[in-house]
Amino acid sequence: MIEEQTVLVLGAGASRDLGFPTGERLCQDIYSLVLKPSMGFTRGDKHGSLQIDNSKLLARLLELAVGLGLANEQGETNEGFVKEFAEKLFDARPRSIDEFLSDRSEYSLIGRICIVFCISRYEDKNSKNFIPTIPERSNDYVFPDFGWYEYLWHKMTENVKSIEDFKKNRITVITFNYDRSLEFYLFRALKAKFNKHDADVADVFKDIEVKHVYGRLAFFYWELNYLYQNSGLSKEDYMMKANDFSPWEPSVLFRIWGDVGTHGMDARDFESNRSVLTEEARSQIVKRFIDAANDIKIYSEVLEIDKANDYLQDLLKAKRIYFLGFGYHEQNLRALGMVYKVLNESVKIFGTAYNMSNGEKETKRRRICESINLQERVSSEAILSNDWKGRNPKDSIIKDFFRNVPGADLV
Image (cartoon, rainbow, N blue to C red; front, side):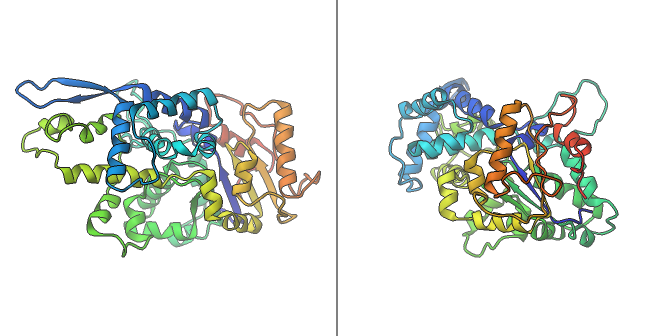
């Protein structure tokens, strides 16, 4: 069990163990998504295939969203606008998509929609590990590698005999990632270990919180059912939100394309007893896309919501703070409320610095120290372990970090 009050601050590198993209890779994924074609089908005696560029399909989604009153702030909805977004993203070469959207607010909605598409591709429930399915090299059944999540799980369950004991772990997670892989992992592991009902397992997350600074992909059914108030939702909205958020391939966009019964189809529409997509159903699909996109936040919105003080309170109470897979950008430190704030003088601070040069590591170290008014007092009371790169590229870098950096082991 983790007995010292601990905060884990997760950047994109913290999900890299599980195959999720870093900030730069996500930008590449989005650029590729916009420019690729999708495959759909046409109705008729011969069910022929139809290829349409995703840029055209995404423009149709924007057009329908505006027409349904779901995106009144959206200006342009044509294909040229969507392609222009991808081209500007390519030219700007930002460190993250959030950084780009913060500078170019006119692309806010299309950017979020693309984030939903690209991140959801990595959430594959059927693969047993919530990451892209890795082709089996043999017929052996293998345990998937969850990287440092397994290390965290074993620390949190050490000497724990019940789910009530598990709640006594003194840990909070603040993540800048959109994916929900950590919640997925912990929920399933808790349910299997303690043989509890979904409601009992969900209750754990009231004590051990996972806070997403920039939002995330949708709620899991168990969060919506047992953790949040649903009284304001209509029956239709509740059913849409309570359905598991499955990976969406771009071909799903064909269901909103063209005349219903003509091109607004995908392969499932040719199965027996399949009804033709109705206008109402198409509207629901568009609404689901826009709701998911609106759950994604950018830096300027995070400042408006003013959650920084909430995160700062977690940091002020902490005895140990770990920055894992984190880039230490000042924008993100501000989002945490850390800039020019004084943390507990006895706090121990650890941070990964994977693939950074000595100069970059020193810059990051100084930025952290200045942000919390530590100045040069980085000693045994406040440690930023900025010299760790991982010993073996095949191993979990963060797992090795916990195991090998002096004093970094979770306690």
